[in-house]
Amino acid sequence: MTSTTQIRLAARPVGEPQDSDFDFTTTEVPELADGQVLLRTIYLSLDPYMRGRMSAAKSYADPVEVGDVMVGATVCEVVESRAANRAVGDIVLAYTGWQTYAAADARATRRLDPQAAPISTALGVLGMPGFTAYAGLLAIGRPQPGETVAVAAATGPVGSAVGQIAKVKGAGAVGIAGGPEKCRALLDDFGFDAAVDHRSPTFREDLAAATPDGVDVYFENVAGPVGAAVTRRLNLYARVPVCGLVANYNATQAPDGPDQLPAYLGMILTQSLTVRGFIQSEFVPTHHDDFLRDMAGWVADGSVRYREDVVQGLESTVEAFRGLLTGRNFGKLLVQVGTDPTAG
Ligand code: NDP
Image 1 (tube, rainbow, N blue to C red):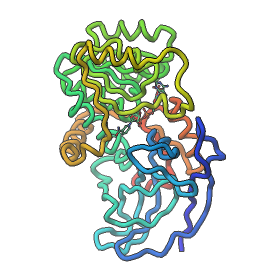
Image 2 (cartoon, rainbow, N blue to C red):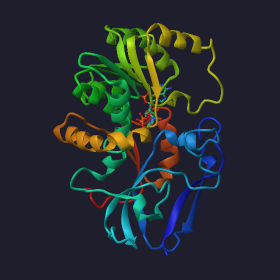
Image 3 (spheres, protein in one colour):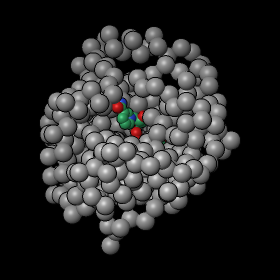
Image 4 (cartoon, helix red, strand yellow):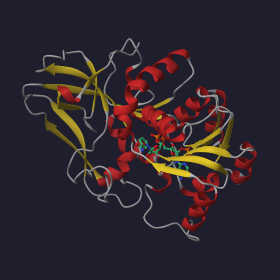
């Protein structure tokens, strides 16, 4: 028998998740059934959507029940197999959550080729976040050559891909990020045309200076005051793929100040905006094959670069997750849960 250390949801967080909202437990992994594999977690992806899963509020996916293991995408090594198409030693993309080992149906895993790309990229630039950027930008944002695309959380896996794909398509990219170090990375590492620090007291003036021709596509990752400021810069017929609202995820009450909704609706009306929310899975049937081909090519030829922020050990997970919602991460946030046999 193999034992697994798990992080279970102990209570629904109110505001920022606390250590006491989670339990660490160790238990035996059940015997494998036919068609199953025993997986050892190498990398666990931490993503903002997990805050929604901790809440009972109605959403596009069911919440994690109190007492259940927290969900999450993982890259794992097959350590035992009762499935014909999976061998011991295979590296797979799975959805086994916040734990060190798990039994999984082999059909719920995708084999990765460690020769093709570092295996961790299946959770970032070549995985769900990269796909979110690709599908949301190209299917909804539809940037045209010479237009301006703006995105916040711009050094994260979604935002960094949005800006770089915009550049591939001939548009200009304006990135918004928290702090000078992240803004430098936007210019020097990710090739954005302009970077604006949303923590600066002159943010609104800096944003105006960085978008002299206005904004044609605002890829909405954060909402809050950043979203409100970019909305004022939107051009006639601008498109707004609404991808995420990370500024609100820990909110326990409406923000202070006047209701922003009338002004927002006013902009939609007078600027003839297209504001369209999406969950990336909607586009899997229509865009995922193209994504895998295009993104692999762009990463290989250097058009799209990526940055990872890897914290060590399952015990670091809760603290790292808190940092994701406040901007402490710098790049795609991963927990290295176990040794990576493919690392050089
Ligand atoms: P990131 O790694 O970019 O992490 C979130 C970042 O948000 C932080 O690092 C921080 O960056 C920024 N942030 C946090 N709070 C605020 C705030 N109050 N104002 C402005 N920025 C803030 O995350 P991802 O790239 O994984 O995800 C980006 C967005 O995409 C999220 O909203 C997520 O929920 C959404 N998403 C949506 C999907 C869909 O299907 N619709 C699928 C996947 C992701 P900084 O320090 O630069 O401010």
